[in-house]
Amino acid sequence: MAHLKIRKSLLSFLTILTWTLILVPAAGISGDLAESGMSIDKMGDKIGDKVGKVVAGFTIKPDGPDGNRFLGSEGCIPCHESEYKGWKKTFHSTAIQDVKADPGAILADFSQEDLPFTREEVQYTIGSHWDQRYMKKIDDEYYVLPRLWSVQSKEWRPYSVWSWKRKPYSKYCAGCHTTYIDPVNRTIGDEGVGCEACHGPGGKHADSEGSTDQIVNPSKLSIERGNMICASCHVRGTDKSEEYYYPIGYIPGDDLTKYYIPLEMKPGEEVRGAISRLYRDWKEGKLNSARARCEVCGIGGTGAPEYEEQKNDVLDFCFSCHNFRTKMQLHTKHPDNVTQVCTDCHVPKAKSLKDSLEGDIHSYSYFTIHNDNCYDKEIEKACVTCHTDQKDGLSWARDVMKGWSKPIYIDH
Image (cartoon, rainbow, N blue to C red; front, side, top):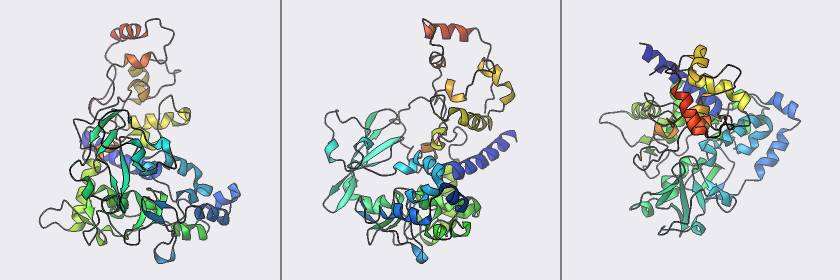
């Protein structure tokens, strides 16, 4: 029963964490407008800068359904600057990057011989946290090239080697790397997975000076409708025509079943049930051995400039399962006046995904930090980052740790 309670509390915690830190909350803006001294007209100037921009063959067009319009994530800055900065730290903000505009977006080492493409051929990157894929234009279509770069293990791996030329970006990928796509007319509401990918178009919200009735707040939707926002990309499927591998015309808050057919349906299963089951599998599949990556929500260790503000967030996150907050001093063997968080000693190690290729965006493991053996068990390596006064730091740290009794911990 205790394990079940931990599991349920963690699910609730992760749901709140997702909507409050990964996504942009739909808060009122009228007070923020007055405080910032910026008007809706000023916001409109920002939006217009991107209209007509072409991203991987799709033109940004702000027109949305029902007379609404898209502002673009930058259009949210005047009133939601802190949320925008948080979004910039997430996977969503680097869903696609233009290499011409930002050559530094490429993270891979192209000095290796026998690569099937060169750095100069890369026009767009996809991703930047775990794996990074690369795109180039061939004739009238963009394609994801047959090697990916593992950011964590710093190595090249094969990707869709035999079928990549049969999978154009516009049909297989674009819908989940952009905001509100029209593949027939080749238009998008915004580049990347922006604020409005989860909150819907913000034009009416801005025109009404921040009315919360004119924007989608995922946390205020029913559980099913809220989950559908994530499921629209994190559950594999096709549109109703089965031509595109993403929903077309779907707006956050709507019923996804009207736009999407999951690929992995069981015999006799309804679309609604399949979406719910597959999304639940995505979210919960790794819960027994994993926890959501702290970095996704901007939670860092002592190296982060916001360290003091984030310290309690890190501890709250870890102690939601490791229930020994009152015995922290016994666990760390450090006095209370030493400021520490869990990741100072339990340093996540860069893992190679070479032997486990399941960790893509459709797998919960893509977002996990707490897989078994995921952190460096030689904790003494972390000691020397602070205890720089010791001549032979590692040997000193090992000797000190040998003298410790077993740390206080909760094994779950």
